[in-house]
Image 1 (cartoon, rainbow, N blue to C red):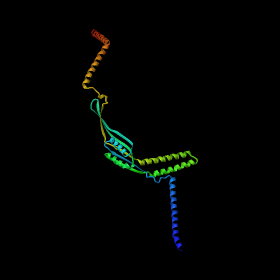
Image 2 (tube, rainbow, N blue to C red):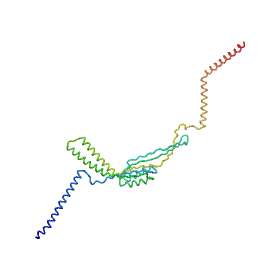
Image 3 (cartoon, helix red, strand yellow):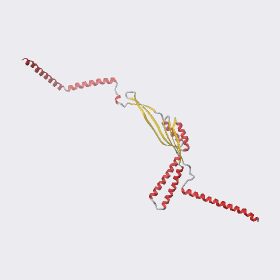
Image 4 (cartoon, rainbow, N blue to C red):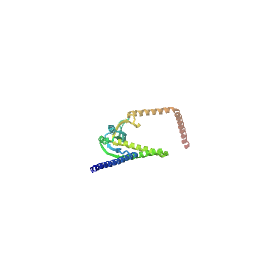
Amino acid sequence: MKTKILMLPLVAVLLLGACKGSGSGYNTDQKVGDTDTARSSGADTSAASKLVKTADMRFKVKDVQQTVENIAALTTKYNGIVMHHQMQATTERSQDVRISNDSVMHITSFTRVADMTVSIPPNHLEDFIIQVARIGLYVNSSKMDIDDKSLEYLSSKLKQGNKAAFVAEQNKRDKNATTELTTKDDLVDSKINNLKIDKAVKLSTLTLSFYQNNGIVKEVVANDDPSAYQLPVHKRFLGALAYGWSLFAELVIGLANAWVFLVLGGVSAWLFIRYYKRKYSILPDTIKS
């Protein structure tokens, strides 16, 4: 009787151990099945979130050229890269002031603006924006956006796995060159898209636009109006006398060259006058008679 009583607890312990063993086996099989499913789908369940940060600023500065240099140095300090830089000066008005016969002062009013695009590590983006704001006189506008690309990245990666499996299956069966090539191109596009997301996650893009007050530039340049280059009045007067004398001399020389015509003309005139006097001196006597 005592033996039966002692056997009951032992049987209970064995049954409990058997139940635990079967339960743990089931859990293990389930975990293995889940792992196999994840591997077959190509999903990376441990992938970090893909947060893409972008920002833009517009602000006024004292000197655009100096600001460009300061931002370039600040970008290097934060291990960033200047991706785009453009500076432009536009002439607003211009005027020429004559200061002498051969010189004028060219006065130009201009506006200078600049655009820059920099890539900054995302953990330094906020500090970089604060430092850039301190460089300017004041900020017109500032904006920062965070775009979560995690689902897009995961979707692209899952599709890569499906397309890779499809290509492998196509290689085992009868090949369709057109379908296989299209699938491989789509696979490449998906990989490139994910690489772009990875790059955008590692480096945030900041677009900067800044300007300064209108500037004035004064330049003394040569007068490009030919009519402005004239001699002084007394030299011009003496030149006029000399030119008049030269004209008179040319006239005398021209008359000297034509002396034959002058003599012939004089003789012809004398003969005509003599003939005229004779003709009209006879008419009165004829009338009287």
